Amino acid sequence: MKGEIKQLLRRSRVFEGDARNNFNNGDYDVAMFHLEQAIRLMLKAKLLDIIGSYPRTHSLRKLIKELNTHLTDHRLEEILRG
Image (cartoon, rainbow, N blue to C red; front, side):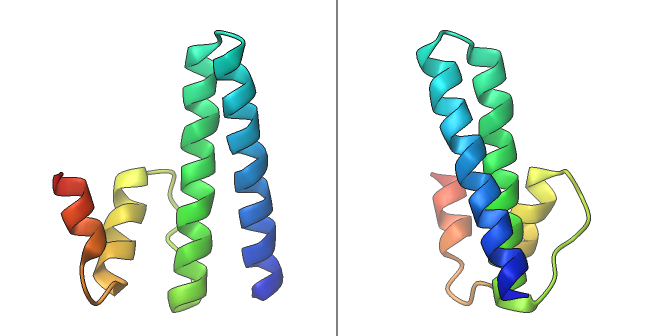
C-alpha cells in the first residue's frame, strides 16, 4: 500500500509540474486539466493512507466528501466553505 501511495503522489507531482509549464506557456485549459489530475491523485493518495482505499471515481467532489468524512476535525469542510 505504501508503494501505491508513493506512486500516486509521484504522479500527482508530475501533473502539477505539467500544469505549471502549461500555465507559463499560456495553455490555460490544459493547465487546468493537469491541475485537476494532480488534485485527484493527491486526494486518492490521502484516502489510501487514511482508510486503506479510495472510491473508484473521477469526481473531485466525491473524493473530497469522502476525505472529509474521515477527518475528525472537519478542516476540509471549513476550507471549502471559505
